[in-house]
Image (cartoon, rainbow, N blue to C red; front, side, top):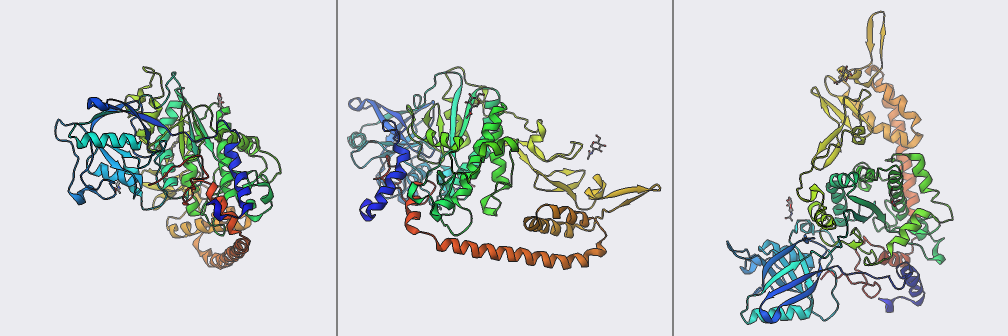
Length: 592
Ligand SMILES: *[C@@H]1O[C@H](CO)[C@@H](O)[C@H](O)[C@H]1NC(C)=O
Ligand SMILES: *[C@@H]1O[C@H](CO)[C@@H](O)[C@H](O)[C@H]1NC(C)=O
Ligand SMILES: *[C@@H]1O[C@H](CO)[C@@H](O)[C@H](O)[C@H]1NC(C)=O
């Protein structure tokens, strides 16, 4: 890698890596481990170290007994075992099978998936070279959706341990082992401190989807634990800085805020389209500020709602990712915390995030995104509700675990407080908040057979036949001389829908002031529609012209792009599909 780069890029690489090595003693990646205790045969008895894979479900706080089986064929587990006619489902009364497979030729996750489908209870991957243990990570390519469905634990064992196990099996010995995660996380007291290193970017493929699914499914539990004081949660976001010599380059300007101090990679890995890295850094900063402000008012759990709702309401995929799309609780405080992203000065909040990235104590640097840190140790395994809950629960001093650790079906009624942040009508008796086992969702309701439509957060309105019965369909109404005159008509649904999208286009061009005028007209007599359709032509013309101008602007931006810098930035920013250059990183999280 280095050999192919001209010398000046080497210098640049050093600057970029400086963030990781600023604290020379601590800067490192820590391979998280559990232990493998061999109970028989006698000559192998002892405890061996293994590295927890970053997928599947490690049994934090627990143990698993099993017998080791080394398959006769498909020893790298790169093919389904069905293809070679092998199955490892334990017979009734038999011990679970820990499948021993060789490293190489395919993704670690493929091996795990094939072992699971063949009935194995865990997969042990034997390294193929003598080296310190590494962390088996997930690939970032698409077409690997099965990773989410891997539920067995995985562990990498050293080449030497692998050789020993194989030899014992060849001799016809039965190899009994115990996988043990009880000491994988510290559990010193009755409160668990945990961190979630995440990113507001939602368009990075499977990793981003996994991140969002985790927030969605874990939110309810996280909030209950936090409200009851069992945990102290802190979200974190990774940022980079631009090398000084490039601060004024187009690349750093589009990827960074605060004059190159805080950067994120381009979400689409394409400088010419969609969002830029700086949009991501800014949104990350807003999310940290939401947490800070919420934490100050002793409601840190509000972060989960904001982040969840932001992902639902403002996805990049729908081009809604923006500062304006969703505002946190206290806009003024949040704006103060965010500061001026164009200012040539440090932002204390992001500075603190950069400092926190570097490993401290047993934790090591955070280099995999997303990463969960529990009691200052990095969690390894699938980012799923029950797997993570197990890890968090294993962080409590024994007998101090909250109930939720003992049973999973916790109740939360998250709609009781402020309608869970969802839309409600003025009287408060019609709300979009629904409490589900996954936490609350904001969904426009159906009341007395009248369906409400809208985003569920800021807006819901009655639709269909009967909508005029509810709050007069939101239309103008006046009583004069004992007669009530109403602007509501039940036959205008098509136009209403149309006007809603047109209103958004309009608001974008002319600012919100225009929108009020348009909304009012939807309740008017439909005879005026001819005049309005003429106006729509003009408005859409304007919208098209705007889109055209934007395209030209983006095209010009692209022509400034310097592919060398892009390639270098790409290597140092996670959430990219590029192979990790292992020579440069303090860690190898090899995929095969
Ligand atoms: C993973 O599990 C889900 C739900 O259990 C299922 O719908 C999906 O098909 C599974 N995916 C694969 C690749 O097996
Ligand atoms: C959140 O608040 C708690 C106490 O109220 C404090 O100890 C903690 O440091 C705060 N966290 C952050 C990130 O500000
Ligand atoms: C909401 O409550 C008010 C009184 O508080 C009542 O008059 C009205 O009918 C209620 N609306 C619905 C839809 O239940």
